[in-house]
Length: 306
Image 1 (cartoon, helix red, strand yellow):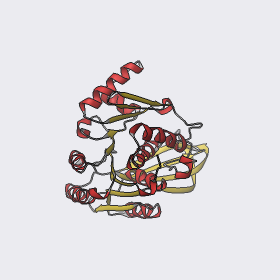
Image 2 (image 1 turned 30 degrees about the vertical axis):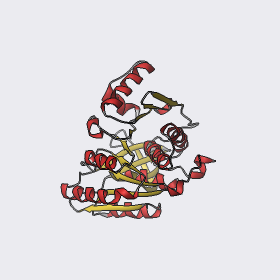
Image 3 (image 1 turned 180 degrees about the vertical axis):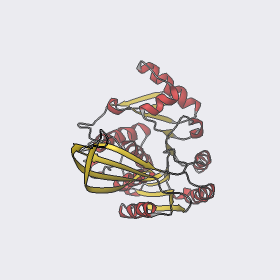
Image 4 (image 1 turned 90 degrees about the vertical axis):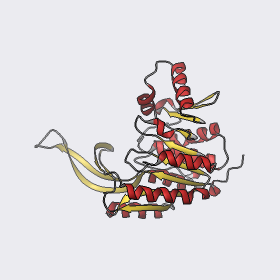
């Protein structure tokens, strides 16, 4: 199959956040409490959540559009700037009643020492405006990704899936929380091992995992269910088919954002006309590359297909 990634068009909708990193040196323990003292020597800011999914899509040379809500604040403006720099077309609704979600990570000796979160849920009015935009934009895209980080930006997700199905657009969901009923009729959902266990319960054997995955897939009327399993790779469950991909990571440096890379790569491959099993194979390769990088990183087309 000839893959023309630059023709693929993906719409990403969901919770965005600003990932802030403070890097520093640790040379002593605080006299005030038994915690390390970090002398900050550098900082970095990267788009997180759905913004990181869109950024991963653009890094693969596909066309990415991001639809989301931010606060009307400095962090929201920064996300808009970062999206522009990454080549992502961003439709960001600015909600003056909330603060943009920020995840501040303090890194010392290449280890994360602390994470501080700032977040508030968006208002009903702004979410309704975003839904109207979604309906307007939908027809221009090959695939839709709904990136749920549980921050309130996907209150209308059931309706969004319904609209995507009516428009015959594959819709991929990165799920959060225990209420998977809201993802019913999606094309594919991509829980990680811990998220899947939270919903389906634990398992002791591969056969038991397959039974649980198939039961959930049928219950939610999904075409596919992909469980990403960290060092065990990832497993795709479709009607009458189970496809397992072994992990390809040689060195795991940082798994943060790896799920974003996986769903971004899946979306791009499906938008290019690949089958689900082939898309998972390529997404697994992308995951193996991205976990060897620090922070919410991306994989470029050249790295993936070299």
